[in-house]
Length: 403
Image 1: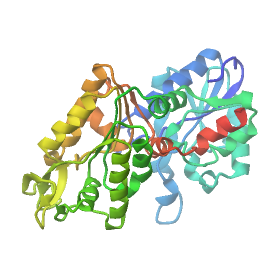
Image 2 (image 1 turned 180 degrees about the vertical axis):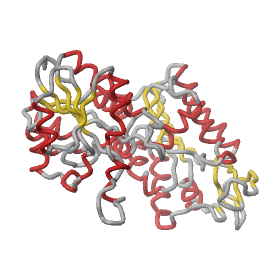
Image 3 (image 1 turned 90 degrees about the vertical axis):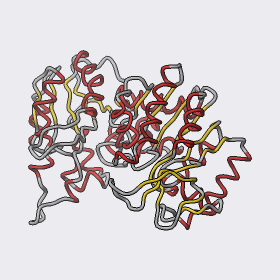
């Protein structure tokens, strides 16, 4: 991160896309807390700080009259809480890069914080508009991107704006640096054995991720709804379980490739099944290859869980992305919660653990063991694409010209 910027104005892209209740109170300030080290570092250096962020998708949820719902999506709701977190007065600009932003940025003094209005109140943001990015850039002397969760978006405030700053006047924030460094620990130099846990509904969402990890992981655990595509690909009877018939050949190829690379591919041998997708459905535990018609697999069974735990506890590097079942329903949460507990246990024994993806993060938080794992990523889609090997626009915008 940049240093020696006393007296300068820093334009900082943060991810303050926090959940709000019906009274517009913040219900989870994790993303704001994650940004604090960068903000406080800049404040300690004597820089004036301009923060910009998006909140929700206001252009997709307009009012009936076609106007933006400012009351719901304004960042003004965050001002008081941000002031408490930073122990600073937070000045609010009623626009993003407009007249109010310009006037308040000019008067901003070292150590003060200016929060701009929602970047997504204009279509120029998502289009990566150069003129809009230029107006933002004109507000400050340096640019810092600390919003890893949006690094996969080539938006004006995350990517385009960087082109207006010389390499020595732009950098990642402390959170972005940590996100990149921890992901690279898994990708570039994982301690062995390395166990990867991939869950979620669809194989199609995780194809590139599985392919990437087959190249170097020792164990790959497949859970969630996508497991049944793999089971059917091996001639198993999966009843009414979720399946992507168009990806059966792909699943067979991945199974074959895992064998060729001597990767231990673990697919649930038994499942908790239900006769309806409902929290109060009838349930039973059966062999995953013999699920009756009319029933569907909604969680990993006890035999599968025990094998998964062995693979996790024997590992020195663990990555987890995606739940093992429909963990929002208590009847089908055991597999996911057991994984959360086991990843925490492995971490306490010295394994490096990285957790990414909204559901996985929710599960580790729900388990009460979030403080025991090595690193929890703030980026769902961004972390997924980074682990797949993609160059994220928000990262390339900083790194590209610095080389």
